[in-house]
Amino acid sequence: MLMTEGGDLDKLGRGTIWERQIPDCLHQNHIFRVRPKPELLDSAFFALVVESDIAKSYFNQVAKRTTNLASTNKTQVRAFRFPVPPTLAEQRQIVSVMKASKATIAALAMKAAALETLKKSLMHDLLTGRVRVRDTSRLGFTNQRLARPRVRR
Figure (cartoon, rainbow, N blue to C red):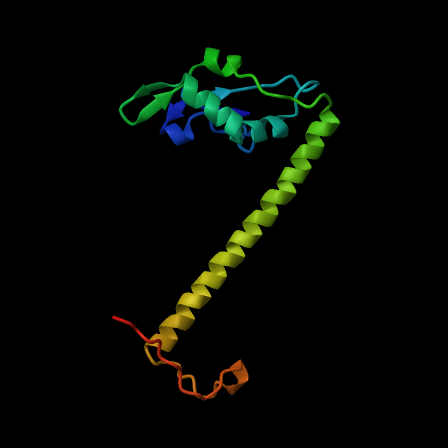
């Protein structure tokens, strides 16, 4: 597990699982390498904890702040306490559920973005006259003139 030492406050304590994607890779001194005991803590579960409000709140409280920057240190990372399910199986089950949930959220976000893009495109075509609406009967509208609201003074 790799964690950031500092930077912008919203990035403080961010982490990710390092899976040796690059052989013989070195990291800079602004990155902490955290190795949980594998018999007690699943790395993927710990990665979820680091993303959580519990971790964000903790690192926001203990961070040393300067103008526009915040940092933490090895002692503060070691002092971070959080609830841990008693078994690795339960931790892995939580990871599995969260992974599926994140995938669903990401897919829905992509779908929402695509629909928003389509809506903007259709609105542009309609408002510029590129596409004209001629037959509204299929849409359930009548050809009756729209009533104007009365305004009282």
